[in-house]
Length: 364
Image (cartoon, rainbow, N blue to C red; front, side, top):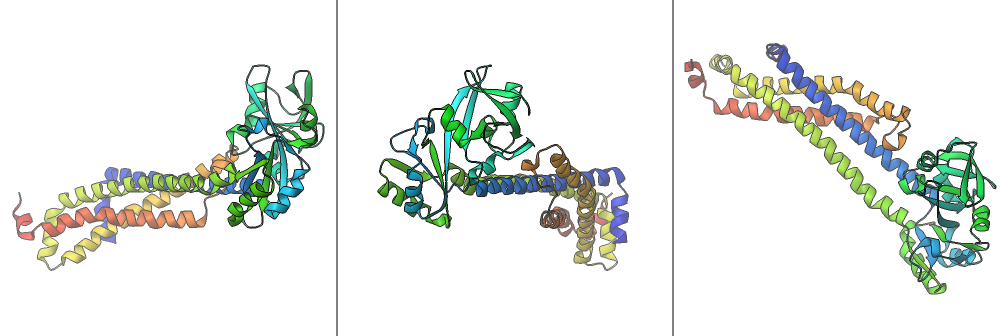
């Protein structure tokens, strides 16, 4: 090990740059992996809050804003689907004074779907007030304590500002279900019904039952549920791929450094062979150099990785990163970095095995 340290110390600038490259790769792996983990966890948490395995709207209607479902049908929907709960939602679209669209949602504060609209500022949803998404508040120039014109001449006090993982929702406004029904002349009706099942695997069975028992309605797999369990898996895989790509770059840096070190020390290593060292013993020193480069890089990258994840949380981007990188991510990243360092040693070892000591000793 001391010999490996001395060998790396002969070219301090090259060694330092390689360690820095490994540190960047390790920090990127931890940061990207923690971001993917945090994003998926938050998204799935929102899905759990909505309880929307199945969505129901009026049959033959293409857009939720045109759909009308009688509130009296909620009990029939629940019975047909054998659902744990159903949530009525009013969905409409108006325009702000600047002509930007303002999606408006009406939900009951006690329904699971209200979990989508938990305020980051102000107080929760209640009768007689509105909550604005962060993007809508910025577009309208309105904050907590202000008012929003939901319909021409119909202003509502803004009680809170919410954020979610959905850009469309963050550009909208949420009202108490009864307030939305009254404003949009939908008393006794909802636009959508979100159905929460005891067993999500029964979604197809529940859809068939609703379509059969209530032919004036159309049930489908909820877009939120579908995206959560299909597209989020792709997001997580893509993030892991990017993270691993960063470590591959680190391995290439280690390979380049060790390759140059071995070429520069060809005669020295040939002398060791001549005095009785085996190829495998010499190869072990090169592997040790690779492990040292990788280990030093992982230690150096640990601090920046931790600070990156913590900084995103402090900046209000908790949906993009976990509050702190998990031990699994840190240990997994360290293991992969070590493997990358050892893999980066292989080209240099291959050069050693191909070089004959006699030829190396005769070289000028």
